[in-house]
Image (cartoon, rainbow, N blue to C red):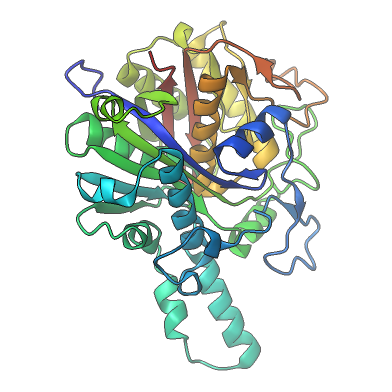
Length: 407
């Protein structure tokens, strides 16, 4: 990574969103500005016996509405979300698949669980029927690499590089960074990149066992916050070389300025202040910005006591006394795992375009240990130049993305 001026400029020209609060860029933008909550009872699996049963699922998702070439029934839910999100992103960018086929392109999809849901369904079938046979269709659907490969198959992109990035809750930012590098370095003209995850029982059980599932709502940075809500969704972005975007008269949402990655190897599930701070500093250096240049931070902001305290401490380590507004869209979306930072990046791009800072909803009592401006409960009009999107994953995998207003 480098902030050298010899690198080509990369812009965002298409947004594909499938989320618990809205589908499509326009509906998602309205929902984020309004502070809409996507919380409801989890229906993807039986939650009998769990103390807390809420999550943030995508309602009324019909993959057949977005998948034309492939048979939706042959895809797992995560792949369905990936292909549908890519379709929406291309439509938003006003691009036909033939445009991609004629140019060097990249498909990069980040995920936490891939098609774990298919594995769960197969195991449930074995347990309830007593059979040891494995459905060959389930075996095919369970491969995580299909998330990117099925996008290529749907659009007949036979010459693209298709990569699935499994870096947990930071995977969306990782995939965006992958696409950004390919275009900035001249290896591609266009990238379809982002993050995807379906609601899976494995994640629900894992966070339950950690004691970090919230009972009813996600309230990041609130004094009385009680934990995370598991979510799902698809956030896909079209990135293009600026000259190519200009040549075709594309609408430009924002510019990708740079990003930083780190693995602090500190703890399996607990974030490390120094590791997060180092990642933020790397992102600033790559993007060529100073802390004072950042107008707001889209925090990882899970709503757990440890994450929120550690993340804000890391931000202070880099920013000092001047902290910009620091918000968490997980208060609305829950934690969509591999899709989380991609959906947050889309919210950042829309904020830059439409001139607002997203709210942190469910905020009732400021936490004196945190003491930040989290833009509580209501979006705020703002003229924005540069925004920062944090993603902190289990295992210490961190990814921080910087976006700027296009000019």
